[in-house]
Amino acid sequence: KESSAASDVYKRQFQEGFRTLGRMGLSFEAWLYHPQLDELAFLVDAFPDNAIVLNHVGGPLGVGPYEGRQKELFPAWKAGVEKVAVAGDNVCVKLGGLGMPVNGFGFQDRAVPPSSQELADTWRPYVETCIEAFGPNRCMFESNFPVDKVSGSYRTYWNAFKRLAAGASDAEKAAMFHDVAARFYKI
Image 1 (tube, rainbow, N blue to C red):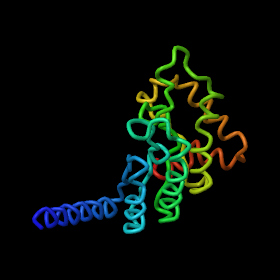
Image 2 (image 1 turned 135 degrees about the horizontal axis):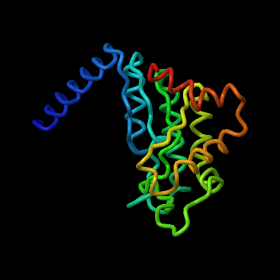
Image 3 (image 1 turned 180 degrees about the horizontal axis):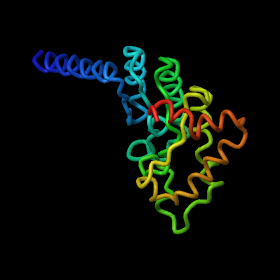
């Protein structure tokens, strides 16, 4: 019981701090892994006045017990992303961060780095799912550098993003490459 009471106190303290972020007009960066997406959906719904961004397409894991299981785990990741997207219009998603070793694509272990086409092909299901769930007006491409540098160059990443956005309209490209970030971060 003591542990449960302490947990309730910490939960209330977190929620009060989160309310304070909203009152101050500050945003919240949610960097988490895909098994935690339900918790973020609750937060988005419970705090509709807070600006929240889901980082790195919702953190699909591909290491440890998740290693080599991307295809098997994709439906659960997708359902979590969709749940966050419909929880409220106060949340956007960053399209990127998939070059980190934790995602399990293994690009960091190769002698020759991947091309922008290979990155785009590998990341397409994740990026397209996010764009479909959130819409282009709540998506922003991100570099996640220098962390993603282990899997490719900055130029290669942005060329992959351009390939991923090739079918989008000019307005959608403007939104995902600039406008959403400028609006979200008030710049």
